[in-house]
Image (cartoon, rainbow, N blue to C red):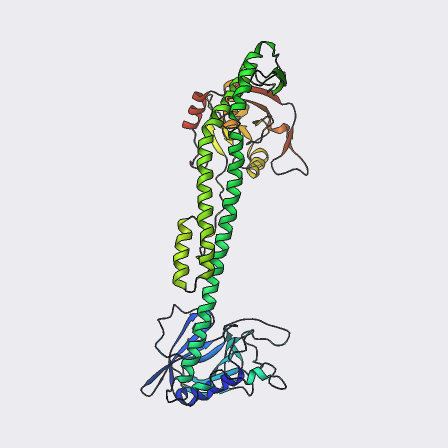
Length: 501
């Protein structure tokens, strides 16, 4: 709560005899809404705090030398320019209002005196600090703005806030009456300083608590989501024995499987009564390769089962550790306690916001990956959907060869044909290997690609970026040759100067 009108009146009465006639030696801005004026009068030095924080707007003397302020920002520099070294002629309050004028005299380059004033509108919400010249024109403000009621931008003439017809009862309350009349010359300022230091400390404590509470909530949500996903994967991995059984049954049914068959019904000899069991097949693969694929899935599921179980246990332990921090965070009554809890949370992996400004992330424009085929032709492979569009319709020429995976998302691949040079089967195989390697099915043993000339490729109206239609295309089925792929990756030469494939 800001100082009331009665409290501010008592402060001004207390400050006037101490500061009037003194000279401003230094001006600091320790926080966004605070100014500290160092005033020398005779052999005494005072530190006047003016705070325009909407929650704690106030004015009083500090009871001890403040810590060194950080480098000044815009408004502080303006106040320094006009008021450093200036004598204070008067400190006065607007009648029955929470507005205080600190009137000084500055001298121009010709040493001619001019009036300059620091206006502190300490009204709670809407508080502001302004610097006025001798004609009451605004030289600058802490909070810039323009409203329907008045203009407080630089250069505008200062218009005081409208005063109430009568003061409300709370404006006449003085919470620091006990400090008045004390022999201690700083009794009133001391009482105000202690009161607001307690309020600001409580505010900071709650802010830190809220920040840590939010980070903890996000971390718990993330780990519960992870546990759910790992549990699902673990459940699938525990079905490894079922996959092995399907592979064994498929071995028995091998003589009865015909090419292109999509499923086969076998007797499940592992169950009582030998019930029928339907096993789905990949019609594009021979029967033996379907068996190999099933046993590959079995080995992968079996190997992943222990790893997933360990990950699930670790995630449960992390959730328990985070849950144990909930109550201590709510019960913490000091910043030091919250700091210790913050360290514990970070050790558990709670991501806390970094308030330092992050450098702007620059958009990468590396261009497509470039490789050289066995026949010496350049092969370009796009990196993204947007680059699919750029490669096919901006970089490639009409007679260049275009390639894409059949039935799978992946990059556009272009084989450059300088002078209409012919594209050999080896060139096509090289390009197809790259199309698979940089796609979602990297690591597959078999794949099918389609290829045509770039002039036969068209954008699809209304479809996502990089989605195309094509004509006069030829499909080609390949078996991945590790040696071929190794040669291509080893000899790659990125058209933009290198980089990881």
